[in-house]
Amino acid sequence: MQKIVKTIIFLIFLFILSVFFIGLNRDTNYNTANQINKEIPDFKVSYIDEENFFTKNDLRKNNFTLINFWASWCAPCRIEHPLLIRLSEEKNMKIVGVNFKDKKEHAKKFLGELGNPYDVSTKDMNGKQSVLFGIYGIPESILVNKELIVIKKFVGPLSVNDLNYIKEIIKQ
Amino acid sequence: MNIKYLLIILLVASQSIFASEKQIDPKEIQKNLRCLVCQGQSISDSNSDFAQTIKMVVDDLINEGLTEAEIYSFMSDKYGEWIVFKPQLNIQNLLLWILPYMALILGGFFIIRLFNTKNKITK
Image (cartoon, rainbow over all chains, first blue to last red; front, side):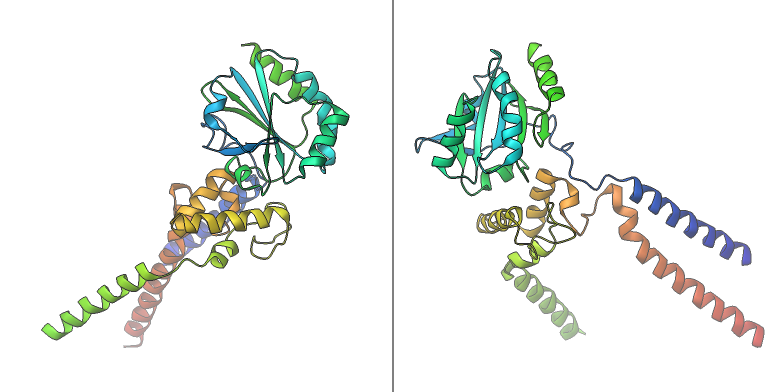
């Protein structure tokens, strides 16, 4: 009987230890792993200048698309903007801008000041469409291929490393 | 005996009827969703921009006819399982769900056994 009790106490101790070990090693921050290699969701955003809608099917004609979520009120968006301008020179990729919870006149002023890297400019006024992409803050960018599969999601402003990574991917 | 069976059937049937009529409370769902941009707050507690958007999306999903479980699954799909406070039952956390019940059964078993052996000794 004593032997059984001892074994059970040891097993409980081992279990608690392994729960702590797994729990403390678990990444509790938001990560994009569950979005990669999946097809992008059906979405419907209106163009910034007109009331027509831009949908998932409109992306099929592009070899690669970078969907960039941005706003004029977002300071990090200003930081990444020159990189987006550089990426807009790439022939093999189109950039779709989704203006997030912003005012049209502010967005236009922003693009007027810093340049417009977007092949298509759209807006998501209440942010609901962005939830479909798992956006929780901006800027965020999603690189998709012709089959509309997510290759990579960039959380936060794009860096020079990200720029080089994108260039490398779209070369293929 | 027959009345007993009839009562049981009526009880089960009424429960299933009430369950199907039960309205989904958006507040309950919001309480179980983590605000990813806040410190330890739920979507329900937070007034952040992110929380406001998620609240709107939850309302839309309820109106579309999704069940509570489907809404959690939708959110987990978009933001990872971390967004749900109460983890969903799956292979990875199966042990976490069944262990308290196992501990309860085993504990009960040992207490009964202990009493029985003590009784035998005193006899």
